[in-house]
Image (cartoon, rainbow, N blue to C red; front, side, top):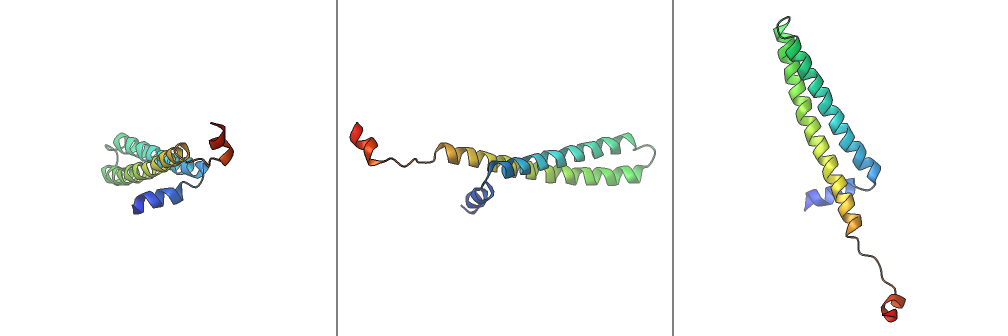
Length: 96
């Protein structure tokens, strides 16, 4: 229940949710680029390539977790507004 409440507080506006999701994707792509660089320079400097691999795997994990939080908050925001109960007035009930 704590996670749902936390996502609800996070999903106050749509732009914030999308910014968190985009930040996660950007972090993931930076990790992907570093992983590619580590594979490309493995023959020249193996220690640097290993360190780049470690950093890129950490960025992979951080990017995936951040993007997942952003996606869940986007989904929470959409479902909340989709299922939000609308207040009906007395005039609507009498008209039927």
